[in-house]
Length: 198
Image (cartoon, rainbow, N blue to C red; front, side, top):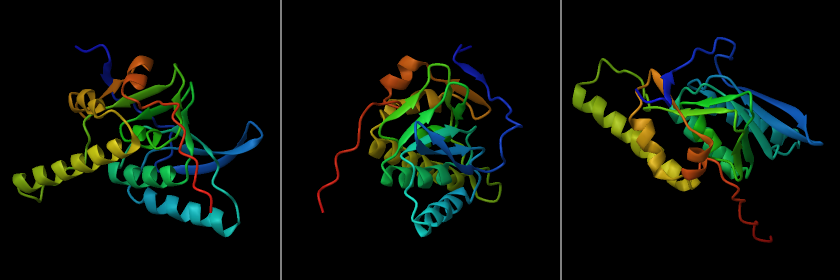
């Protein structure tokens, strides 16, 4: 068996849906995104960012992630929103970023993971649909994979990241080494380009 492949660990202490909290970090606010990515969390994140805007509060430029994953489509939407805010993303040493969570990590510029953080991928699970005929279910999966592929490309992640992901069944997780995180550009020191003067 592949030594990097492990059973997907249970995370009963995690919130059942994402929690968005602001905490101080290096004399500036940071956004903590914690918990399982549930269906509808993208809408909740949009509401959260709108609330910040209504209060005249800027989006924190540092985002810390701690999540076992969950809804891929919600992760894609939140990730695109994070990229729009030009934030840095980090997985701290005691935290995890598994399954769909690396899609959020990929949104950062720069993006980092401590050497002791657990960052892992597996086959994307888009939900079992026992109503659809098999060919339609396959088409749905292929559409989802295409969305993930396009997203990773847009974020500047090496698409070969999908190789260990596609080889690892949904009930397992492939834990990426620090070298692999760098190799696949899931961690990167790239900074966003300077905005054009208005």
